[in-house]
Length: 237
Image 1 (cartoon, one colour):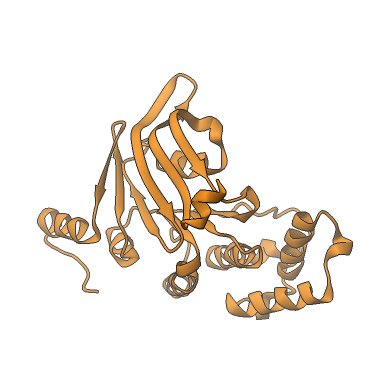
Image 2: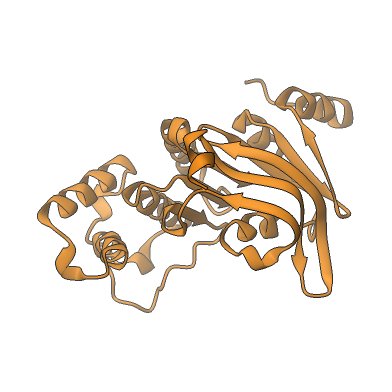
């Protein structure tokens, strides 16, 4: 695996099939995905989009073929369309990030003043400094996504898995999240499941289309032409 990482490759698929016991969702996936790459996964409901993301963390979903991941699980961040934070826990935004560090370090005692300073810097970067002492249960959808993104930054995530990350956020929050993704793009692999054509085009990335067990790759230009042909409307960007 270390050889892959020295080449900048974080994920390598060779004729991979994904699915669950008794049900295969997609076959014949092959490709290298590495540092600085961004991919968009699209397809109808049930095509295996979320499974594609989940299988990066759960090798049991790989039914055949070879999938190699050179990144440790602790450096893989998952952002869902409806962030499932533990609303019942009386935890503030700042405490949430400190607890995330404590889990990685296996002890609260290992969290240093330097770590606390870094938490504050991350909160400032994701625009949540004014929410630092607010309960996470009071966050909006966009703020919750920013918090999870902040955790990914804090833990130096190298792979970002984003499952419809913009579905529960307002326009301003979406703009902020895109800016954060662009900032960390050179050092991460980003895989986004999206459905909105405007978001897909804004991603400026290759598109992996899953449909009826098969996959097809479109360049950003090819996807844009498909939208122009099918709908005769496309955002200017």
